[in-house]
Amino acid sequence: MTYQRHPLLLGWREPVGLRDTYGGVDGVVALQAHHLVPDAPLPGLADTLVIFMHPMGIMHYLPLPGALAAAGVPVLTAVSRYPNNDSALIMEKVAIDLGKWVAHAREKLGYARVVLAGWSGGGSLALFYQAEAEDPRAKATPAGDPPDLTAAALPPADGVMLLAAHVSRSHTLTEWLDPSIVDENDPTRRDPAWNLYDAACPQPPYSADFLAEFRARQVARSQRITAWAEATLAELKAREGEHAERAFIVHGTMADPRWLDPAVDPNDRAPGRCYLGDPRLINDSPGGLGRFTTLRSWLSQWSLKSHADGVACGPRIGVPVLVIGNSADDACTPSHTQRLYDCVAQVPRRLHVVAGATHYYAFQPDKLAEAVATVSNWLTESR
Image (cartoon, rainbow, N blue to C red; front, side, top):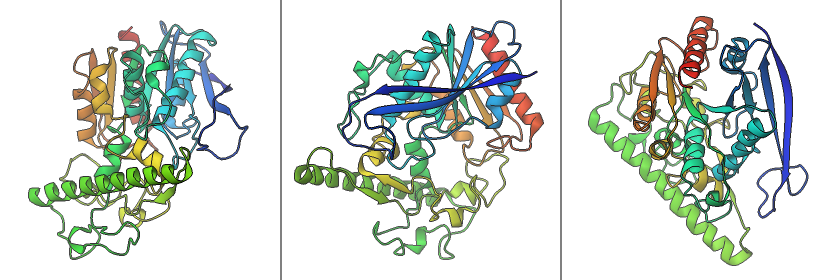
């Protein structure tokens, strides 16, 4: 089956306080998307649009959206105002962006039913958005800045899919933080006893006591960065005004025991690697998660004070949910899949695990086909 790909551009004017993106017309937010329209939609789904959106990712050519469209499911791959750059990303603004696409789908594209497809980091975004649309509570960002989502009138979606998703950016980064770093300004100063990539550190298989202490030290490091960010932001505002900001680097963000010990949160992933490659190298490379950020962005997306906590938001939604996990995923592991499923116990829900599938279904056409069939069937049955 074939489909048509239509590029879309959506824009509006917004008051400028602190600029957090480079370039563009001052005071104008411009978003892009691709509308994938099947030539022959599946029976009963012509009026349904599945919206894929990640906080910063561009999902136009990932395997699943195109495969769904080819199977007869209308799809929109939407992009936030932070395309492929989360260094200054504010989750509350991303929720505003997603709301614009939901409204556009109904008011301009004519779809009666809109379902959010939360892929990977888009899973917690979908739950955060739907919770704020149904039961708005976030009156400001964790830094105390606009937007006020209780006044945003976000249009709720009609369903949520959590696909190879993790519970949140904040909890994921915390589970990946290197607790051996003792000086944020000098990443060479590390405690070898807690450096997974140092021979002086205990080696796999890890004991329960080691893992418990390791996780506690990760949380403690996250909280120290948060306390520093809050104090620094307050100091800057007092000295330079309300729009003062500072960028900084977070070193050591890819140190999860899961990658070295397959018995930790076990699944079918290959041990000794993460979804970005060798975790020992990625831990300090420019491409590591959350490497470059700002005071406000840390508080909004990476700190444990983030409003976009999927597990905390899940109990606030009232629409059907599909959760799909991939059993060989080395980015979003089984405990995340289960936590997402558990947090929406109040609504009709379904859990499906694609055995042997990796995070992106790369070079796995049979696994991709299984995911497409699962999504298509659920969309039809959950009307």
